[in-house]
Amino acid sequence: MIGIVIRGADETAKHLALAARQASTIQERQLNAAAVIVQGAIRKRMSDPGGRHPFFGRTGGIGDTLSTRSGGSRRRVIAARARRIGPTLLAAVGTPDKHVAFMEDGGTITGRQYLRIPLAAAQTAQGVDRYAGQSIRDIPGAFLVRTLGGNLFAVRPAGGTRSGRIEFLYMLKRQIHHRGRHVFARARSESEADVARVAGQDAATQIVKVASGS
Image 1 (cartoon, rainbow, N blue to C red):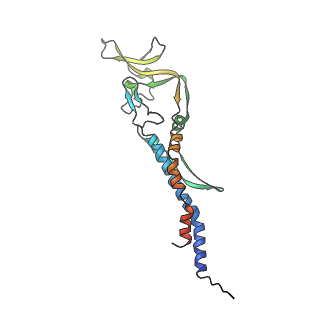
Image 2 (cartoon, rainbow, N blue to C red):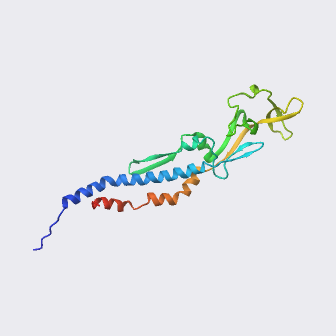
Image 3 (tube, rainbow, N blue to C red):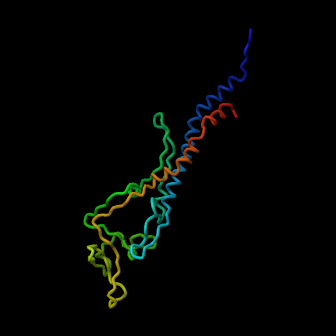
C-alpha cells in the first residue's frame, strides 16, 4: 500500500482563497495605471504653446493638438478608476467640457446673427476676448465696416483723430467651421503600446505569487 501525505493543505487553501479575492484588485490596479497613461497622452496633446499672428492674434495648436491658455480644460481631463460592469472591467478617460468634445470631431457653429471672432487688438496676452460679454455698441469708438471682399469687421479709430487709421477688433461671421483635432483618438493610438505593457502584464504571475504565499 502506498500512502500519500499532504502537508500544509490548510495553509495552501488559505493562499488560494486569498489569490481569488486579490485577482480582481490586481487587474483593477493595472487598468487604473493604463488609464493614467492615456490621460497623460491626452494632456500632452492639449499643451501646445500655440503662436501669435499680428492681425489674428493667438493661434491654435499645430496639427492634431490644442493650445493651452489657463490650462483649466487640460486639468479637467480625468482618468476614472476602474469598475466592473457585469463581467467586464472598465476604466475611462474623459472630460466634462463640451467644447473639448466638440473640438475632437469638429463641426460648424452658426450664430443667431453673427459670431464675433476677436482679433489681436481685442485679445488679452492669453488670447482671451478682452470685451467678452460686452456689446460692440458699448466699445468706445467701435463701428462696423465691410471690406471689398465682403468680410464684415468691427473696428475703431486708432492713432489719434487725424491719423485716419483704424484698428480691427473683430471679424463677424455667420458660420464658423472647426476642423476636428482628434486629440483623444491620437492619444489613444499613441499610448497603445504602453497600455499593453501595463494592462497586459501577466496578472496570473502576480496571482500565483500570492497563492504560493511568496
